[in-house]
Length: 239
Image (cartoon, rainbow, N blue to C red):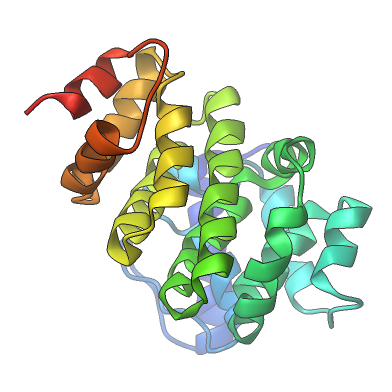
């Protein structure tokens, strides 16, 4: 079932109306109190079309999944490759965020690539939500998770999903700077050093919009060495 971004928005707005009893208008859709259903409606009615579900079928499947009870632990979903359900698990159970943050560094780059291919929007939303939990974690736990998030950026960039990558990067860079962690900062800089073109431009915008440019600039000058400097790394090293 193919659909335009407007069709997905309309169906999400109708679902919100049925669940809440409050009539939606463009730009204002009331979220239902259930966290899982709210996450689905929020994604369907995002302002930018590319951030919504690509197809009506995807929305319907996610909506149905959000009405079913969870079976098994989060890592079981990743091992089974049930990526849409993994996204829904994170978005629908914020009380499990700490456990998920501890589990995600075990998810390999190839599995993150598969997650991005199956449900990039859900993955992006889920990771952004988890990043809000990071300041309450131990230093070792936050280092592992923040470094792992680079796998998410890599998967999105490799899929040419630069807008989603920029959105997640803005949250990741801002969080890393906010907790003042050098180990994940080095991991991020190593990844930035290999970028060019649209990917580099998107990441530079994320550095500025997250107000983390100064933090990464200090790390690029003091704690980071690379054999070659891309334009972005060279600008970070400038005074």
